[in-house]
Each structure stands twice: as C-alpha cells, then as structure tokens.
Length: 189
Image (cartoon, rainbow, N blue to C red; front, top):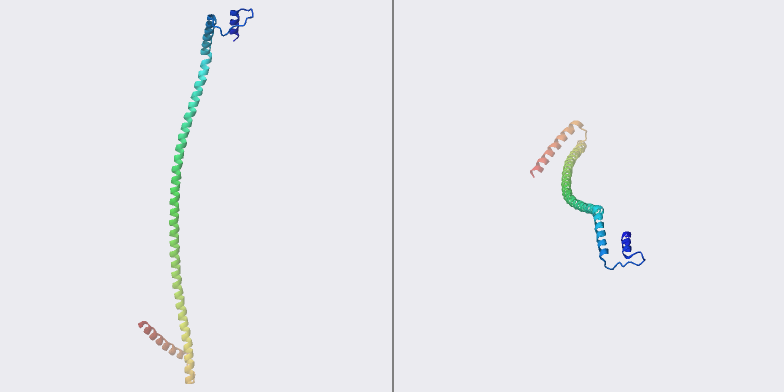
C-alpha cells in the first residue's frame, strides 16, 4: 500500500496537492495492472499452492469423514439386522424351552399320578389283606369263644366236666363242617 501511495505522490508532485484517486490516468492504470500482475504472480507462486493444498486436504478430510460415516452406518445397519435375527432366534429358543418345560412337567405330573395310583392300589391291597387277616382272627376268636360257650353249656347239661382238649377238638371239627357248609352255600348263591 505504501508503494502505491508513493507512486501517486510522484505523479502529483510533492507540492502537497492531494491525489485524485478516482481520476482516470493511463500511467496509473498501467502501474496498477503491472502491480496487480506482479501480485498475482507472487500469490500464484507462494500463496495459492498452500491455500489450495489446505483446501484440497480439507475436502479430502471431509470426504473421508463422509465415507467413514457411510461405512459406520452400513455396519450399524448390518449389526442391527444381525441382532434382530439373534433376538428372533433367542425368542424361538425360549418358546421351545418353554414348550419342552411344559412337556417335562406334564410327564412328571403323569408319572406322579401313576405312582400315586400304584401306591394307592398297593395300599388298598394291603388294607384288604389286613382286613381279611383281622377278619380271620376275629372269626377264630369267635369260634374259640363259641367252643368255650358250647362246652360250658354242654357241661351244664351233662352236669359234668368232660375232657377239655378232646371236647374242643370235637367242637372245632363240628364248627369247621358248619363253616364249610355255609361257605359252599354262600358261594352257590
């Protein structure tokens, strides 16, 4: 800028007159074009390559960032799809496990019911056997009492006491015959 000021001052003289900047003059236009050309040559040689290099590097960084963002988005979409498939697979496996659990529970329930029925039937059989045993004991006890009563009644009738062991044998045989006749008569009904 100082150079331009000096040139303008030389043209108008050192007399202190103010230069007329907007007045057309061929020499001023020529010098302006020469200075502009030199300035453009210096800028083209020293300033424009770094500026253009910086702009190209910035454009490349921006493009790389956009490309990386695009790759990341594609990877994220692929990952999301993979996760969706894995989630669907996990849900299917969970449903299968639940179904298998239900089947296993139903199987255990059926086994427990069968075991309970078997135990119940065994208990009923044992109870029937115990009842039959107790019934036989009761019948035997009643027989013994009946024999004792019959002997006592017979002794009173005869007014003498007979041999206890022999009398018991006779009465037991009689009661056995009577019992067999009742059993065969009950079976024929």
